[in-house]
Image 1 (cartoon, rainbow, N blue to C red):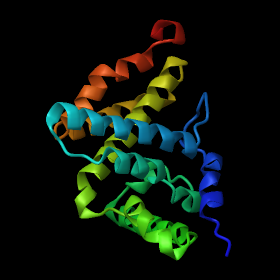
Image 2 (image 1 turned 180 degrees about the vertical axis):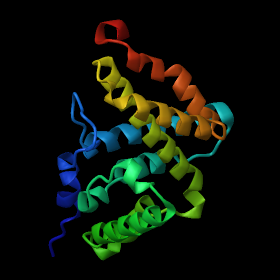
Image 3 (image 1 turned 45 degrees about the vertical axis):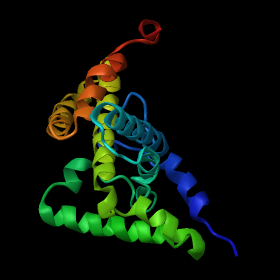
Image 4 (image 1 turned 60 degrees about the vertical axis):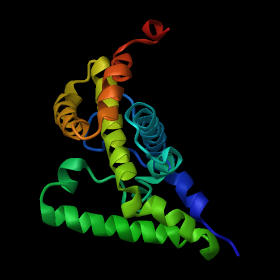
Length: 195
């Protein structure tokens, strides 16, 4: 039998993000998910090493890789629309769930269950999902920083609101603060300054 899960997942590279914003450099969903995965994994490592947490860093990285995979089917819904009011937020969550079920149905049944807790939140991975959300916000902030570095002021307000969201998360997760303080400043630098 033939299955289309991975061929469909590979189409993340065709989904552009920030559709309502003027971008100096387009960002696709595949790039975004990789960055979220790397940051979420780092947040887990920091939490485990410095704060005696017991995060599953590998599971978190996988959740990060697939956290927006439903957008292959739904497209990227702009944040101001997605969170405009509770009704729209709830309806879109239902649409995302349906899209994730559709994606999982593209896997052989005997391995499908191994992917379910990557696509759907399970209570035992609640903290890992929150760290992926924090990584998602950090990735958005990085995009804002990169756009501002080119002189694009289109992302100024997005940066402000994203920084507020991250600040709220950082109060519960010190590893987020550590990432902000230790890694985020380098994103303001040029390639020559990074050396």
